[in-house]
Image 1: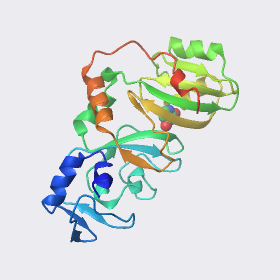
Image 2 (image 1 turned 45 degrees about the vertical axis):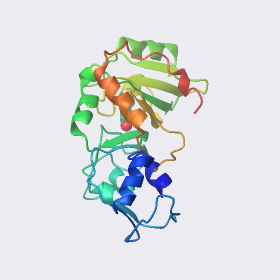
Image 3 (image 1 turned 90 degrees about the horizontal axis):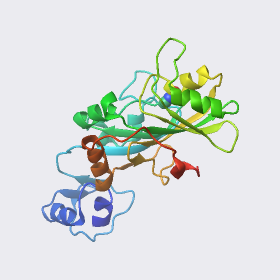
Length: 245
Ligand code: URA
């Protein structure tokens, strides 16, 4: 039991022991007796404490909207259990319906606001597969700052073509509507597949398959806090850590 609850990243094992001792944990409606009590995966475990700030890393699958609710279409919130759906969580920024990858969900409005602020300069790294080869000229155009068809000017971005033709890593610091698709369209390419690999210091956990989520670890929460307080460094360099996908 204590392993299960401390594995959520929300409580230390010591805190879990205290929660159990004070009768705040129930298993299928019966108060948990002791921390080492075995717990079947099918059991309904409830912890009776007010939910504080919650930070969730989701591997967004294609086909869901990055929204909290929608009259007709399924949203990413529907991947979460009931108690979290009622916790006021929302996605920090949006990924297109057909985009996969890292999506942060939180109920911490202040943190979300700061992360999304253009002044925060948070690098977002994407893996992209386009419908044709991407060249050094494309990389130079990205670095120079592309002007989209409607006149929108994009800040300097990093495009690193990978060995497989049409595949690349792209780092942007903004979050304009369909930004990567529109940047590549400007270079005469159509995006066939798009996946976000990282956002600032947060990397998509390779253990999460599309549709799976987990709580951020205390370490990841600290990294986010640190990012938002630290002086910003220069625009994203090469993202070699993602060379194996
Ligand atoms: N750029 C896009 O075009 N789509 C996304 O979902 C994210 C970045």
